[in-house]
Length: 113
Image 1 (cartoon, one colour):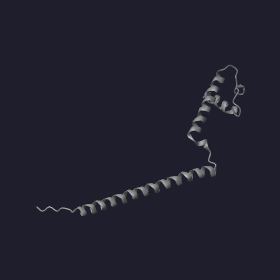
Image 2 (tube, rainbow, N blue to C red):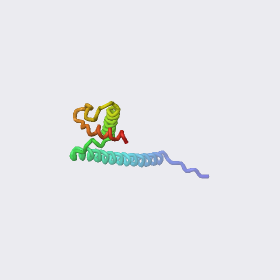
Image 3 (spheres, helix red, strand yellow):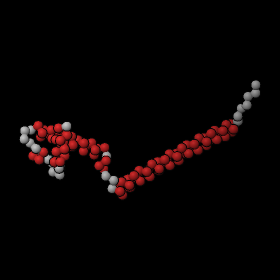
């Protein structure tokens, strides 16, 4: 069997070629990562601009919806208490400023059904 040995210079040349290939791969991955991040930043910027430009309401956010549902549940509970109290009507219940007692009346009607 014949064994082929690389000279020291050939070994260095192969290592250098492998390193160059590896470095090019890392640079390509880094470039792709940077391009992806740029695209993401543009998307976020576009969304923020659309919200500010169109004045998109925050009423549709999950936190606002949950708060609104909680307020309606509290009003429904107040309606149940008012309904149970003898001689108390929806008009006789003090509501927070800006609240219409029609919500309370609706809650009272729903409690009958």
